[in-house]
Length: 238
Image (tube, rainbow, N blue to C red; front, side, top):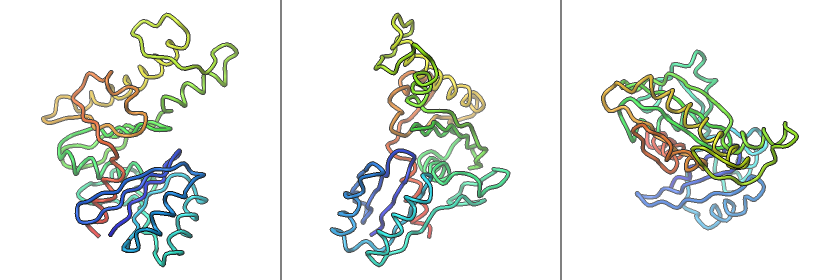
């Protein structure tokens, strides 16, 4: 039984995989009791495969949880080649583990040209060609981070809930609409690089994906958690 763990910037997500069955969950960084309970209640777990972009403190916490159950964590690090994906970053090891796992998950779902969008605290948009080469991509603030930046750095643009409108007529809607339009525009500009290639598609995942996914006027597919899907491929290969 394999426990897959994605330690992101805002939350920790996991999937317990056992003969095709899945148990999934998530928790805030400061409340790991659900993960502790899972490890206690599932004594058949024999492997933990994880990706971490949240820093050493949470890495150490998961290491200690694993040690308490006589397990060790297999940490994903980006490499030149893995699971049929070739990493063309100048320094392959510099690529974030979450983007690398998401790329591998995307290739598993769609073995054709694609852009891989991970929408969370930050939004990443990466390009994979038809041969499985990861060409890199862009990183921009996520929807909420963009909103908070305006609220924190202007005198009158307070952080209030807004909704999308093509021509917003109140400030809260104008801020939210501008932020999601920026996300959609960045994604569509990246997709333009492969739009003429057979089978090209946008694969989008992450907690903030719903904020702008419907605005995208390109072939797209929403997938719940590409990072965990990629970790599953990596675990199966090892």
